[in-house]
Amino acid sequence: MKAAVVTKYGDPKVLQIQEVVKPKINDDEILIRVVATSVTAADSRIRAARFPAGFGLPARLIFGITKPRLKILGGTYSGVVEEVGDNVANFNVGDEVCGMTGIKMGSHAEYLKTRPIKSIAHKPNSVSHEDAAGMLFGGTTALSYVRDKLAVKKGDNVLVNGASGAVGTNAVQLARYFGAHVTAVTSGANRQLVKKIGAQEVIDYKQQDILKLGKKFDVVLDAVGNISIAGAKSLVGVNGRAGLVVANLVDTIRARGKIFAGPATEKSEDIKLLLSLMEQGKLITVVDSIYTINDISKAHSRVDTGKKVGNVIVTM
Ligand SMILES: NC(=O)c1ccc[n+]([C@@H]2O[C@H](COP(=O)([O-])OP(=O)(O)OC[C@H]3O[C@@H](n4cnc5c(N)ncnc54)[C@H](OP(=O)(O)O)[C@@H]3O)[C@@H](O)[C@H]2O)c1
Image 1 (cartoon, rainbow, N blue to C red):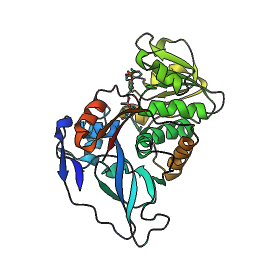
Image 2: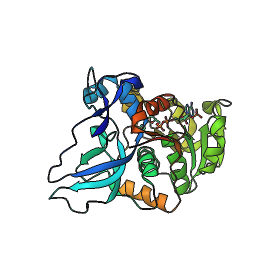
Image 3: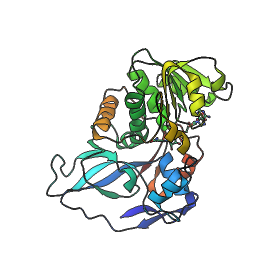
């Protein structure tokens, strides 16, 4: 099968399209033919070995000290079940499914195998493979922060920093879905986009320093990484709380009380909820660009700019 293979850390040129062995499933696994996947901030970070401050060593212990341990990156997929192990219930050949592969990665390939017990859901017909694959990374992260860690509720005043990215576009829409009043922080170029997906107020970070707004919020979600714990505390009111999606190691360890950080979860029931919101037209996938697998290095280059708007999709 065709796959995007990475054998050393570096710029997008380290990616090579190669023929590799198609995975063979065990009795408790299914084989999925990938139709669409995405290149995410996580793929870009792992390929370049570029992690938030303090996470370099722990991340290299997981992903490989001197070179990537996993040769095929990719944490999201949408595709069709091709083979089903004897001990698998609930999934049949031909089912359209989408999901996430966690730290096993492996979705930047024509086929992947998985035990279909977590981070997977049947894809509704009305949601395209491209939109499903694009939604997963930002959608699950935003849901994990907006609903679970930050408990956003009706009437909350929510500030989303980095509102035009994969996490931000989902966070804006989900905060609105839970009844919040949303202020989006973005550059002027993305003002119309964040309004279209529901932001009621927009701050252009190039014109205004968000730490000097002189205004308190019930909830702050930072998907950029330029708000420290002290900065977050200065932005939230007495009962306020802040989520630092991109915290460095020290802030991740120190986050407690009203400050939340750390990894997001990837749960099947969350993916089902997000797909259902998409079916109902309450959540859209913002698509920055679509590349074919042969051009995956271009997709990585786009993500590396830090300027993508929403999601970079890759089709097989
Ligand atoms: N904790 C976790 O489990 C977890 C999970 C997922 C992601 N993450 C991390 O979350 C971060 C965000 O991921 P992502 O995929 O959403 O990133 P992304 O899509 O690459 O973000 C790009 C967007 O960020 C905006 N941006 C850049 N600088 C900004 C600034 N100073 N203020 C406001 N917006 C700014 C850009 O808009 P402009 O062009 O308008 O500047 C662009 O649209 C990444 O660092 C990722 O590693 C963490």
